[in-house]
Amino acid sequence: MGSGLHCISDSSFEIPLANPMSAWRTHGPFAFWIVENHRPNLLVELGTHNGFSYLAFCQKVSALGLPTRCFAVDSWQGDEHAGFYDNQVYEALKNHHDPRYGTFSRLLKTTFDEALNQFEDGSIDLLHIDGRHFYDDVKHDYETWTRKLSSRAIVLFHDTQVHERDFGVWKLWEEISA
Ligand SMILES: C[S@@+](CC[C@H](N)C(=O)[O-])C[C@H]1O[C@@H](n2cnc3c(N)ncnc32)[C@H](O)[C@@H]1O
Image (cartoon, rainbow, N blue to C red):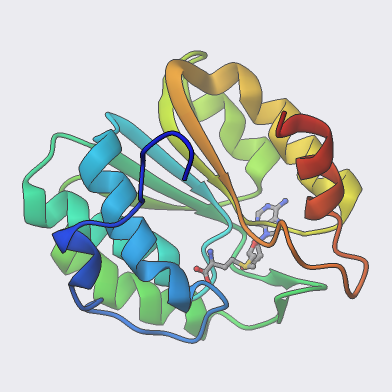
């Protein structure tokens, strides 16, 4: 990469403790790397489903003993792109998550809009946006959560390169990445 960042380190070669079905699986090494290098004080994920990405973030926070507070926001009902699912998904995730990460992390079973008021403006250092992937939805999620970002915040979008099934993250990414 031009900046001299390579987004990989020894951390990247760790094995995820949890490996549920996810389109995020190949990004596990990146999840470990970004937590180690950015060391967020507050990490929020919008869209967690089975938890692959979120559990990878939490695994690294735990391994490094960081003071990071983590929150996963999801209705745990699914959507048009992820598919709709029942409460077993949330229960299975909670059973894995709570004993390992419950001291610094919480699963917020609610909509993204309803969760907004639980966070102070200017507070989030690492925001992962991975909810509904239609253009209007990802734009809404980005715009409503922008005021929550700290001055050193990084925002991650998933699926910026997917052009099928009316995914629209690529379009928002084209508009804002510069
Ligand atoms: C693509 S999945 C998340 C994948 C996950 N990050 C992973 O690592 O596999 C998207 C999730 O976002 C949730 N979701 C979508 N829109 C939402 C909204 N407005 N409020 C709450 N949850 C939402 C769905 O329930 C679904 O579980």
